Length: 123
Image 1 (cartoon, one colour):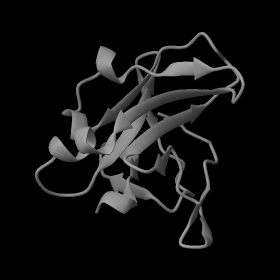
Image 2: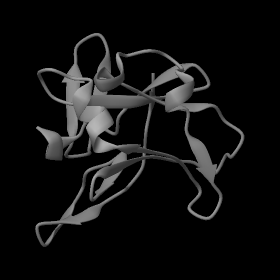
Image 3: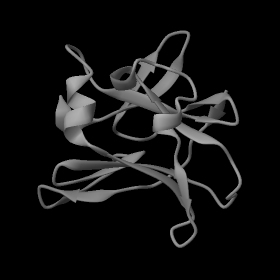
Image 4: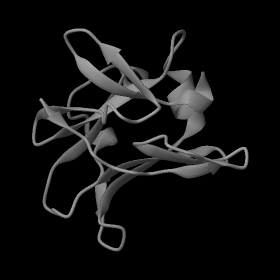
């Protein structure tokens, strides 16, 4: 399993957050997968979208300026699809599930599945 290595820190409560894999702004979440390669198939893959592999609604687009894949969704769409638990996700790149960066502060380890990002602000 590959590991995601990215740094999408943001200011939270006056302190820098080491959350990775996303940013929040208002009622919108932006999923972020950093890469210099712009011709990849990258998808968000999480419990809030039913763990459906390579769902076209969750395919990310490449931002050449930021050298990253991005997908923006309304927070309500994320919240409405999960009745209990925490919001976790990872990325699928060319059909491969990626482990989250295990040094990120917003991760959860799932035995048999690996490291996943957690959207801490929604829990």
